[in-house]
Image (cartoon, rainbow, N blue to C red; front, side, top):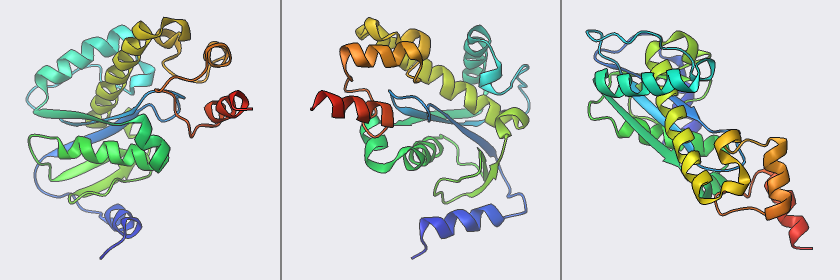
Length: 209
């Protein structure tokens, strides 16, 4: 039985284009201290172009929201999935990200002939796949996936803010800003905080003393 590492290396060596549809895949939320990591997979329709696609980090929130709706309306199909905080803590953030990506691809209504994944690592898939460094800025389907993943995760963190407004999730979206670290010190971690991430682990250790 082939290992996951062998499968990833084998997929990365494919130099030809497979027949059929192409899906772009990207994630949002690897770095934050709280919340899930979210991945999206998108198959665009060449007959329904979407103007303004770009790396989600280069767009304003208003631009992302507009493009999110347009992608959902015009793409041939798209899928959004996530890996939970518990899975992040159990697997590590890299493996949880790859798991979310695999779930997103598996959730597509149409099976692509090839998958293009932003970055330099590939999830374990039974489809021809290629890692594209900087793909969120150069491959439209990956840009679309980055937007879906980012908007979905930001909305999840907005919901978390509404439940726990004192932490400021509406502003920092779970990242380790000074405001977030101060809230952790004052209020302690929530169940949505990633226990395996150093600032949260240190906070928990100090509380147990």
